[in-house]
Amino acid sequence: MTGTEVTSRDTTGRDPWLVVIDMQRIFGDPGSEWFTPGYPAIEPTVSRLVEQFSPRVVFTRFVAPAEPRGAWIPYYELWPFALVPPTDPLYELSPAFASLDLPTVASETFGKWGRELASIMGDSNEMVLAGVSTDCCVLSTALAAADAGVHVRVVEDACAGLTDADHDRAIGAMALYAPLIEITTAAAVGPERA
Image (cartoon, rainbow, N blue to C red; front, side, top):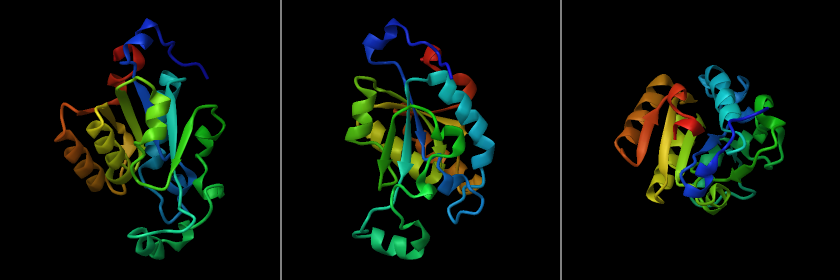
């Protein structure tokens, strides 16, 4: 897979990173209790973005804690099937992305912004978000990154929510954070358009 070459703009700290949120079997497999119905429709768009941004791509994986604490205890009582180790096939990236040699951040939280992701992005303060689900992990990541001073572009047609209505509500909520968060499309983003 070849991506767009990153040019001298690297020294400015403005070259965007594509952060692909939780494109995992647990959300993409129709047999999973956490299946996101819009997942199959966005997967080709996410794949094109990965190719376009590579190597400036980070994948995230939601994983269960070994021992839930606090409010996570009743959460996992509702979803006991998900209380498996991070190495369980449920938590693997989907086949379309599993073999790519790109960094991956695993987290036991919905929001993926934190020290590890910030470290991978280095001095860049530009993030492009795609993945699932718009109304949970994408939203949580976007808000935290924006609070940390990162300009976030959410690729609306490369995200899917639990339902179309949930997706639309989350997009609407994130749009309220302009100019920190910008809602965009796959056709409008790319390293050369930054």
